[in-house]
Image (tube, rainbow, N blue to C red; front, side, top):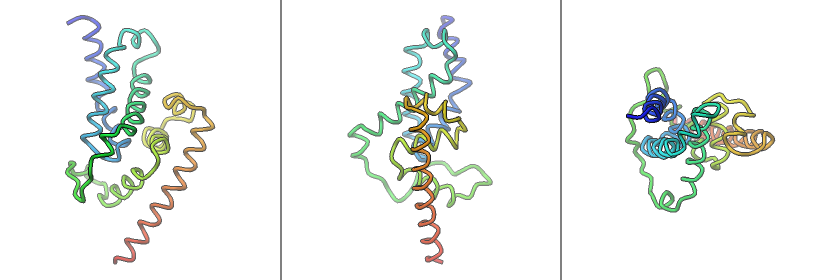
Length: 170
């Protein structure tokens, strides 16, 4: 195994879990799609590994690839042809989390337009600042702020509607 491959393998071993958690949030809990996104990102990272390891570090580059892969995948036709089901076949949420609350938030997140969805995940789930989010998404800081504002407003409305619906059913 070459030094390049060893470095890459070490990076993947250390960061794949973080990338997968981010991808699951981007895909609103779709584990299989998240794994596909991470695989695409890691493949692209490997192709450019010699360039990446000479720069500031692989993590920001890998995050940018992951976000771009998510934005690109949302545009593909074959994604739109898939149908959803009423039942989720993903693993149970970690202990201590309210499953219904988690699903409600993921459902609201999934209804956001793709750029707003990505902004919410990067800003609030990954805890990136406005500048880093703008770099990862390839847009201005003003765009990040406006997309965040719109996304939070939409999510607030969606979550309020969900709460009202749940109270009506009781």
